[in-house]
Image 1: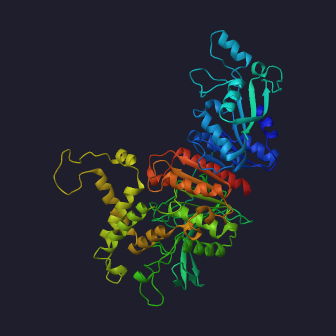
Image 2 (image 1 turned 45 degrees about the horizontal axis):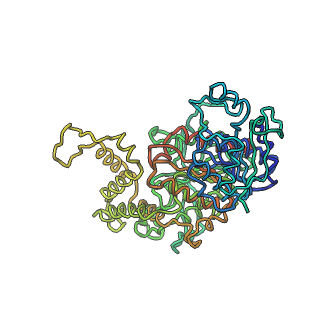
Length: 195
Length: 380
C-alpha cells in the first residue's frame, strides 16, 4: 500500500535524481521513488527493526541519529532531501531543516497539520487530538513538535527558508485549496534556502 | 519462511597448490605455495552464488562444520554460516581459506622451505592484506569463480573484503565490512607491538627459528593472547562476565590466580599457545599495522576506494573500542563521498570487538535481511 503523501512526494522528485530520505522507516518511500523516478540515494533510520525492514526493501539504509545532524554528508550532495512525517517527532527542528538544505538543493517536508479542524474540535472539547495522521494517545506519542501550516511557514521565514510549493491534503487524499490550515490534515512543502 | 538452522555437518579441508610465483608487497617472492580451504554448499551452474569468508587475526579456513572424529573442532563462524543461517549454505557456495603465512595448513613460517628443507621460520616474508587478497584471487581462479556474490569478514577479515573491492572491483558484487577500521590507530599498533615484544623477548623464540630447537615461545604467545583478549572485550562485558570477586573470598596476598579474569586470560593464553604459531602471530599483526589503503591515495580514503564497484554493508558494534563505530563511519563517509551503494548499521551490543563473532538478535536480523537481498540477485 502506498501512503497518501508518497505520490505527492514522487511528483516533486526529478527523474534519476539523488535523494536522501530522512527517517526512511521501512524504506517503502525510497523503494517507490526508485521504481517510479529511478532515483539513487539513501534512507536514514535509527530504529534497528526499521533498518532491517529497509534492507529487506532493497534500499541502501544508514543507521544514523538525525538529531546529531548529517555531518557524514557533504554540501549539496543530493538533489532532494526528504523529511516525510518525521519533523514532528524531532527535537532539533531548526537544525534538521538547515542540515537538509545544506546537503540538498531542495527539501520536501510533510507533516500532520495540527490546525486541522478535527484536531481543533477535540481540543475545544477538552481532549488531546487524535486522527488518521496523528494516531497516538497523548501519553505514548513519538511526536514532540507538532505544528500548523502557519507555524511551519513562520519558522521557515525566520530561518531563511523559502517555500517553493505547498500542497495540503485531507484524509481522503484530496488536495485542499480552501482554508487549508483548517480543512487540511496533511501538509506537503517543497523548500529551499532563500536566495 | 523461518526454517530451523542447522550445521553444514562434517567437512573436509582441501589444499590448492600454486606454482606461479607470488610477488609480495615487501618485494619478496614466493615461488610456490599452498592454500588450505574449505567449501560449504553447492556452486550454482552460473557460478554466481559464491561467498568468500576472510578470517581475522587468529582465524582459519575452518569457518563452519566439524571434522570427522573431532566433534569439538567447530568452525569459528558456525553461528553465521550453515543451512538456514544468515549465510545460508542452501543458497550460497561459501569458501573459507587460511591466509598465507598462517599456521593451519597454508604455506607459512612453520612450513618447510623447499629450498632449504627446513621450516621457513624467520626467513618467511612479511605479508600484507594486499598480498592475501592477491593469493585469494588465485584460489578463486582455481575454483572457477570470476565474481563473488559477496566477500565478507570481521576485523582483519573485513580489511581483506575492503581490499577486494579496491583491487578486484569487477569480482565483488557485495562487500560486508564488519567491525573494521580503515587503518589501525596508534593505540592499536601499540597493543600489537606489546604482543610482538612478548613473543620476540621469549628466550624460546630464537629469532624466529625455534622449530629446529624443538621449543615454542609459549610464554610470549600466552602474553600476546592475554593482551589481545583484553582488547576484544568491552569493560562492561568483562565486568559482567568475571566481576571482581576474590576466589578465596579474601585476599591471599599471593601471585596465584585470585580473580576470575586472571584465570580466564591464563586459560585463553595457554589454549592459544598450544595451537598457534608465534611467527604467524607476528606476521598477522604486522599486516594489520601496515593496512592503510588511503596511504597510496594521498591520505584520502575516498580516493583509495574510488575503483570499488561493490555494494557495501558496513557494520559496527557500540562497545567495540578496538575498532570503534567511529572508525566504521570513516569507511561509510568515504563511500558516501564516492556515491557508492552502502548500508550501515551500528549494532547495540555490550560484547566489544568480539561481538562480530557472537549471536545477537539485531546483528543477525541485519545479516539475514542483507543476504536475502543478495540471494534475490542470484535466483536458484
